[in-house]
Structures are given as C-alpha cells and as structure tokens.
Image (cartoon, rainbow, N blue to C red):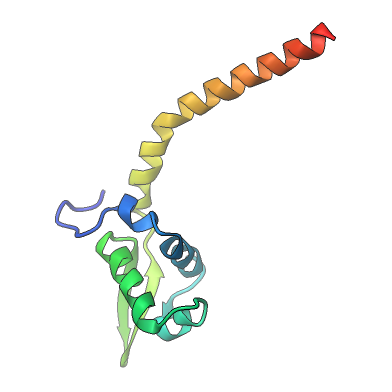
Length: 110
C-alpha cells in the first residue's frame, strides 16, 4: 500500500496519459531522465515533474549513478489499483453475461 504521507496517490499518478506512458517505458529498463526525455515531445524539466509525481506515489524508484539519476518502475503500489478495480469486475462480468444471453436468445428467435 502507498504510505499516507505520500504527496500523490496511485490514482492521481496514473490519471495523466504521459505518466502512464512513462510507466510503460520504465517497465522494460532503468533509464536516466535524459534518455526518457527523448521519448516525449516536452522538455526534460516537464518529464522530471512527471517522474516526481510517480516517485511521490511510489511507482518509480530513483537511483544515483554518478551525476545522473536513473529511474525504474516499482509496480507494487499498483496492487492498490488492481484491488480497487477487481471489485468492479463483478459488474462487468454481469453485463457481459447478460449481453451473451441476449445475443444467444436473439439468434434462437430467428
């Protein structure tokens, strides 16, 4: 779980599409901000701000290597999101089951 002292929670952090793209990018390898910035049409400062939100939510970890800071995905806080979404799967499953029954009954009527 995310600590209550975090400035941003997981839901706030992933609300932005740029931050979601950052998480995908960092899921494959650890990268410095200069390399990360090359994947986005914005300044390095803007990318750093997005990384700060992700770090505050515990979704990325920072590591100093010489003079550069490298970032990597820390997926454990996503469990909070998964648990929240899991509750709503029941509703999706019910709707899909109802749709399936409707379509199958319509096929039989013809």
